[in-house]
Image 1 (cartoon, rainbow, N blue to C red):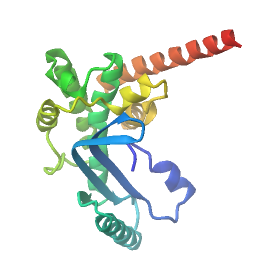
Image 2: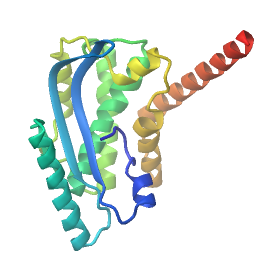
Image 3: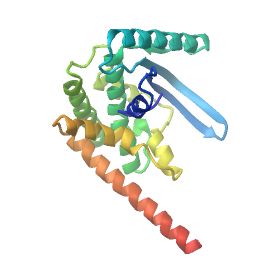
Length: 231
């Protein structure tokens, strides 16, 4: 259960005989004080076997284990779990990444607006839609299929955020504000690299990746200088 693209590859290389279940979770929640989490209005988890180029037997075993894992989640009182095949799960991962790559770094670069505030801003809404569109267009070309009908359209994603009155912020802004490193490579770097490997471009995504990467580098350098001066 992790954001971004290509996150299964290190495990697949290290444990080639193991079944890998890929998953993403979309949730609206906020930690309003230490140890207290407020759940706002949704949680949705998608899971599917990670079986690139696997034969039928391996795929069948991975599918069975994915279904068994979903059953455990249901038994634990987590009903909102969608089971997908390998291709479907990769589309779900690209879709989640498109939303994250648009909303998360934009919140950092714009200095912390809420999710709703970003999509209600006329210029930012244009920007967010454009980032999501270019990433999903590349996803369809790389995966060789049109975007599945069951995935929410960009307009529906934007409308859902417009209706979110919880005041929540993207997780990347929360990490940035707390002085932590952000999910730069998983959310922005990996989509860029996958696109380039296929001779494709993500110009808007590349721009925000370059800006945020430099911003994080400068902050880390400043922290090193301040720490050295204090010592």
